[in-house]
Image 1 (spheres, one colour):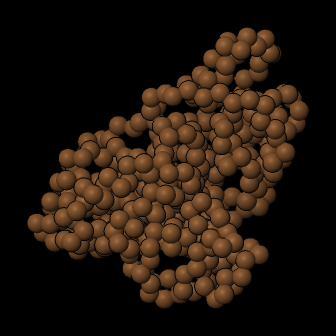
Image 2 (cartoon, rainbow, N blue to C red):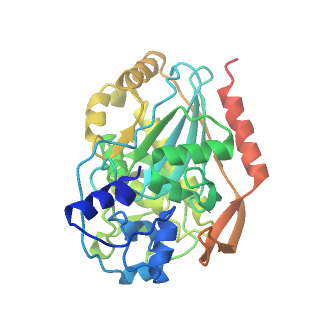
Length: 366
């Protein structure tokens, strides 16, 4: 049922009267390996395949695109919510995807480079942000539970990511919010910036770029050079580009993805603290309209309105705790497709158990 991998290729073959011999594979990874190993002459694959897979398959840089075929389809990545009443404790998956485009196409495939499971309890005014590193090595629910990096699940759709995380944590996910690079920039700018205490970087350079004692990163268009974004350590008022840059940076910190997970939690907390202020809440419709292209969610407008009204009535101050999934770094892991070895993080069972305890405490209704 994947448009890019099956539906559109079948239409292409018929419309162009192609009599090619076709072989079927169970995943994009197996498809790519078949091409690299010259088991096939060409493959049908989503058009942004290099963005998704080039970091693990450098051979893709030499792949030539022979032809493209596209068609406007309905959104097949919709996921029904549990319809949990927002006055009760609820969970939300926050998924940041690696798209710099100003919009989330209905059927576009992206890696999930920021993965957070949020838990809110409106009764106790407490919340948790559980960060899951993108390289966490887990069974992918929609790919016959074959082991892979968890961020690859997003390339198969939001439902696949939700099922994969639910299997990992035994936590039912009530709602999801998917946001891309431009969505983060637009959100923070719509809030007139956020306040964040920026960590001092461990390394002076980001790759070959001298960061001059600051955190520095590409902008939302993945541009370095004159477009590089600089952020001084310490308490700072960040605009949208700066917030995104801090949330993405991992090469300047010894903790790598774990440090980045902490920074993303700081950004989330900064957004929440700013968003719940009365001055911002009164213009939330304007803020939501600015996010239409860069955010996808299954939260109904009514529920958002109820949350805003509850916040205005009670002037709630949330207590937010950030936790991260930890594990064992491995550089000798072979993917399920065979032959490729790459860095992964094998999750620690105690870390998962600790997260379950924290989340269950937040979800208590009494």
